[in-house]
Amino acid sequence: MTASGEGPGGGSRAEVLRRVREALGGARGTRPPVPRRYARRLTDDEAVNRADVLALFTERVADNRASVRHVSADELGTAVAAALWGREAKQIVVPADLPFGWLAELDGVRALADTPAVDVDTLAAVDGVVTGCAAAIAQTGTVVLDGGRAQGRRALTAVPAYHLCVVHADQIVGTVPEAVERLDPARPLTWISGPSATHGIEMVRVEGVHGPLHLEVLVVED
Amino acid sequence: MTASGEGPGGGSRAEVLRRVREALGGARGTRPPVPRRYARRLTDDEAVNRADVLALFTERVADNRASVRHVSADELGTAVAAALWGREAKQIVVPADLPFGWLAELDGVRALADTPAVDVDTLAAVDGVVTGCAAAIAQTGTVVLDGGRAQGRRALTAVPAYHLCVVHADQIVGTVPEAVERLDPARPLTWISGPSATHGIEMVRVEGVHGPLHLEVLVVED
Image 1 (cartoon, helix red, strand yellow):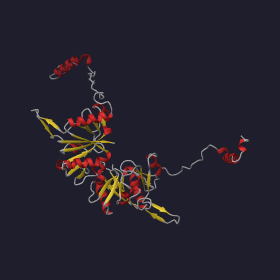
Image 2 (cartoon, one colour):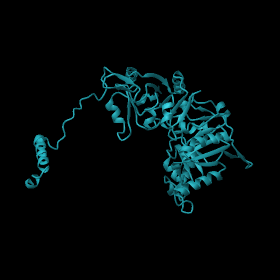
Image 3 (cartoon, one colour):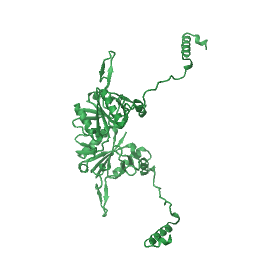
Image 4 (cartoon, rainbow over the protein chains, first blue to last red):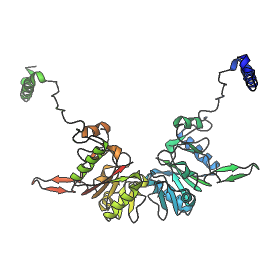
């Protein structure tokens, strides 16, 4: 070992590894402790009951500069249409498996189903996208998409400037750890907390660069 | 026992029960054997492989006087629209959770989502209904609805005169026992083998009395 390690290059590599091993000492091969003392559940100050969780979600979505409205299941079609009319949307794109009832009241708005997949130029040209979500988080005012039912592929909510997201009340959990428990880490997760926002090196906030400039959330209470 | 059984009425009741018990003899409390020698799977004569199962389904649906067409997933929206145009349908009703993509190509056909529930007069007035199914059976050319996703409540497919049913190829099984294995007996199952047909006491076949006069099946091969 020592003899072969003395050659050009080999000697310095062995020396570096020796020093790394020495520095690691007894900790070698063990895992450093990761602090996991973050809140796993909402505190009673934040939410005592289910109605408080919904109220907190609504408040935090609004804090994130997104619009949020509560509707009953029967009103959902009308609420989606009203939101699109309010933005004077003429053409939108939707995942092909979006429930038809969500778009049943559209009048004068053309919806393109993303099957076969709509090209990027069309995605950039449409007035918005309507999706569901996989989960939503009250504490952070976040909606999470996982590419499952009524959510479609990622480009759908990355390119158009307006995203209308339908959240069923039973999809809303209190905290991020609760959402993580519900989600499948193997799926393509998109976590959306308000409209897209970016800071350049000048630390100037710019919205809508890497995703929708406008996010609107409809909470359906059944 | 004997003394009290001799009163008016009591005597004859005891006598009847005695004779029933006597007639049952040793079989009392046992279950009569039920013959279950029906075919559980398709024979090789009927279908050797998956393509044969689909072909048999297509043939049997047609035998049942229903139309049947095969389409790819990308063509489904166009095929649904073409079927409705072919019938000159102006207004249809659909379950609220029908995937939007199925209706994305409709032009000049108004689709009513069944939420809130459409009244019976409207159901009778529309030109048809579009649904999915829970399972389909090759040997009998049957589609089975269970009120689950994209199927809606029973009245939707009982009242309108035309039913367009979308069947995904992987929902088709060979035989009735295979379908029963897949289905939940606690759900409201509707078994549809061709258009509605009824025979009065004169044994004259009348179609469309208790359900759709016309059934059309679109098989989606992914």
